[in-house]
Image (cartoon, rainbow, N blue to C red; front, side):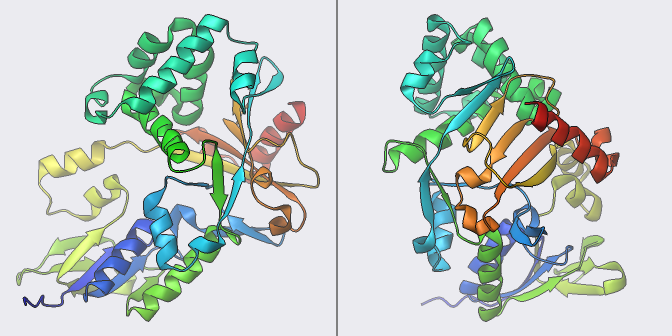
Length: 365
């Protein structure tokens, strides 16, 4: 039997990835310190409070096919608490709201001709059967979708949806982007029920994160929040030194970074020029996401895809069409996301300005 010596790992970044790495290393007998710059763990999955209601800062949903997350929930003894709901999907197009929640509604969808619907359906079916995603990374999403669906379907459906998720960056995206979305949805149907079942954990991701943090501490992981790494560099004895600014400098056997790639390039000066260039070249998409509590529901669609370009947000996510309204004190929770470039001027706007713009558009719809 071969014994493995214990080493001291530092994990920089306390989102779900960093927490899971800490969990796996601790269970393998390693000493682990987990650092997060924010006051709490979870990263973009963390919760916040809105008028006394605590729920996810951004909208999240679990599919039957999300095996990695579901296995983690099993380990945390939370999977049996999951609630699975059949949801509906809407499309807002030409100032009108359409349901697209069944095959019959798809066939009746007025904005597309019968030929367009056949080509759109064939595109989705083809994507669900594609297995060589590496090949798709070499093909532009515009070229791929136009070839399969035709120019009319691309202009009416695909381009607005791509812009909603990626802004003008959709022109740089590969076909693998849309393939991954379609493949995930189809895998959910293959995993059991032949319908679109979405899941949520009562209490939201905040409950999961609290449980996960407790588990990490029980496993001996040292959790340290409010600690931001300023400099990471190798030491003469083969270890790694991390400078936390006013928090001091500490040394570890190995450091794992789950930070955004451009940040990793900045704090690791000893990387080669080629490594820094590759990390810095990775582009991220930003999001401005308004959370709205309503006394009454909207249209009952979990997702309403927006085709009309005048709407300032890129989708309507009616969380209470999925989650029991008692989780929100009997209210309805709606997310209004806007995906933008990180340098977009919207990040400089105040909350009240965004509130006025978003809410007035929602009222108009």
